[in-house]
Length: 131
Image (cartoon, rainbow, N blue to C red; front, side, top):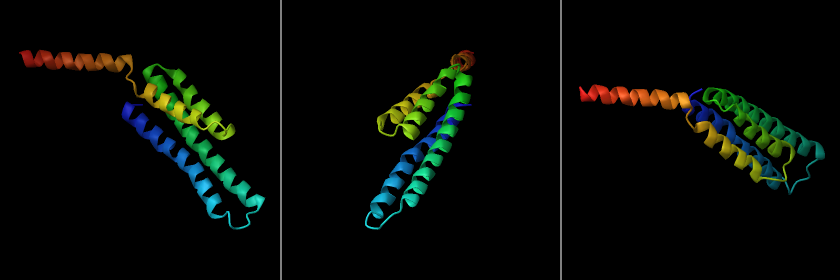
């Protein structure tokens, strides 16, 4: 998976994770004047959990594919930890953000083979311009 494709897929899956909780809180604030049953609250919270799970699965798969390409297959642990804290341990809000940023930083780095191919391209350009 290329760098651009990884960043695009990861960001498209990551940004909604912040919006899901915001939407849940907004709907709770709007309906605070009305009597909301426990079933309605449970349904909304469950929907947010399912959407978060789907988003984190997409992020983990994209990260796994990018990690294999760049030789850093360990980076799949970052979105996994973020998912754990975002879905199960909701009390600690900054851990998922830190894990997402670490994933983006490590996943966006070039692999050694990409550096070698870039160096060869530059060398070929220099050799052709010197002739």
